[in-house]
Image (cartoon, rainbow, N blue to C red; front, side, top):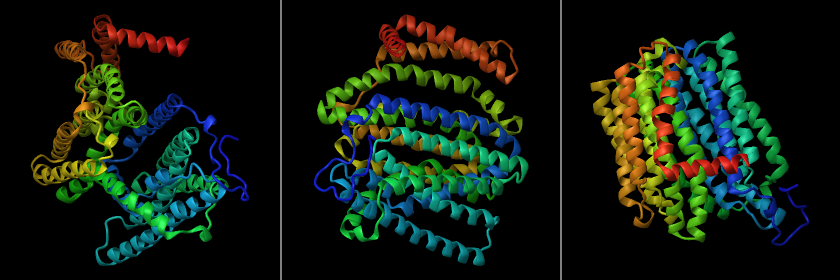
Length: 507
């Protein structure tokens, strides 16, 4: 086998993993891309059913509770998932793997269990003093915390071992299992947030058991191998990463908490969550697959070839990405509401503007994220955290003013403004030798063609079509004829890049 645990009597600097058997970056990227598409398909299957069976209020409940679960899980892990990746022993044999299992998996898990028990006690006391609106959901949510933390630790081991094959299977399998459990429960048993959380708990238990069986065969978890100095080194490394992750979570999700407390109801949270959730599919396309693959490649290039190699890769990527992002923005403005109403149903119309603006926000963030990435290549994680925190603080302050004034859309405007600030900060702090803008000619062509498509669609009312599905089809035809075909004809580098990709793909 390519990945194996050495026998206990093997000592010395033997390699735990077979270097020759490791797949390349292209293989990892292809696997993650396919996995993300399959996860998105699960979302597109479950989203229309859930939005029709659950009211805005029910959506608001689990949008609100999910935010708290993300925050608590992030804190309780103390960045342990990052330490697992950083301190995995690629050399050292079975004994090193045993020390790793004790100090970077077992001890962090025990710490998380302590935090979890304290949270249960705290919620119990709080429930007695200030009875919550739906206490049973709170208890089930707390029950989800520990499996969520454990799954994060085990999948980090998969990442450390470069097992993208298993990692993708876990992410896709758990997402589809989640969707099946949820749809069965809310359709046949309980059409509310309680049904959603009960189903998720059942799914999490199944996945946790499978991952535990796998890990027990791969990594020894023995108390006698503990070394508190090593564990503390992992905590020292992980806590700053946790702080940055927590700031990112708050930047994206604090709006839901503030909507509930400033507007005093779950329904506005539901309106926001439905639109935001669909917009996250754009973030999945641009961040989870593209940005992850680019980060892996750019780190290697920076270390081995210098910043010039990273800049070359950026320019090649941005030349194509500018067309993709402009197309996304035009489609969101023109038929974004149609896409949401087709998937979610006509009673969720209030979520359409949320989807459009948050979708544009994530499309532009994906573009500028490639343009101005570079700080982490210089290992300036502290500055990245400070910028994310500044954007989060602005988001909170604007929410305090704009939610009372504009309701749900106030939270959308606050998110947009805070991401603009984050983009400006990334531009200012990006090392000059790594700062890259999209090609001028490509940008001009994309903007002119995008404006042309928007004008034709707007003036013609998409040829008078009223059906959401027909409007989406018409927009697809319009994009093919007035955007994609002219772009390929006018932009030679783009045309050559597409031809090269097709040749390599189907040769």
